[in-house]
Image (cartoon, rainbow, N blue to C red; front, top):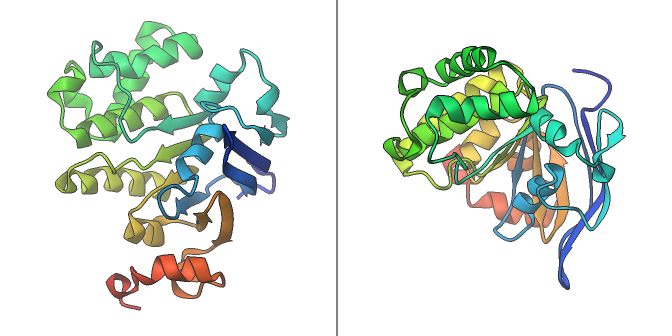
Length: 250
C-alpha cells in the first residue's frame, strides 16, 4: 500500500436548501483499499459518493486527488471522473448504444483513443466481467445483473485509480445480486481500489479492508470489518450492526 493517499476528503459538507446532508467528513483512500460505507437510509452515503465524483458540488470542504484539490477544477473534471470512476445503482447505460459502444464512448471522448484501441480495451474488460458475448446487444436486451456488469466494464475501461460503487446491487433481483458481487469480489482480490456504498453486509464484512459507518451525515466509526461488526465502539454502530450478528454467527 502506498504511503500517499489517492484521495483525501477534508471537512466535506453538503447542504440541500436548509437540510445538512453531509457534515464535516474527513477520511483518506489509499491504493488497494476496499472501503464499504454502511449506515441507515438517509445517512448521506450516496451523497458522499456523488460529491467525491463531483456529480454534486460540495457546499464546503475539499477533495484532494493525488494532492490536488478537485473542487476548484474547471474542465479537468471529466478526466478526474475517468480516474475516479462511478458505478451507479441504476446502471446509467446509453440505451441507444450497443454494449461495446457504451464501453468505448468514454475512452474515445475522454482518453482520446482511436476507435480500434477503444474497442480492443472494451472487449478485454467485457471479457473480464463475462459480457463479451453480448457486445452487440442493446441494454434493453440484458438483465439487470448483466447491465451492471457492463457498467463495471465501462468504468474499468477508463483505467481508473478508484472506482466508486453506489449501491450497485440495490436495483437487482435477488438472483442477480451474486453475479455482480462476484465480479466486485474478484476486483478486490486483484487489488482494485474501491469505495462501496452497500447494504450487503455479508459482502462488506468479507471483502472490505475498511468499513465506514455513517449516520446523520457524519462518519461515526471507521475501522476494520472485524471491529465494526464484532466490537464497535459507537452505540449507533452497534445498534445498526446488531441485527446482522445472527447471520454472521457472532
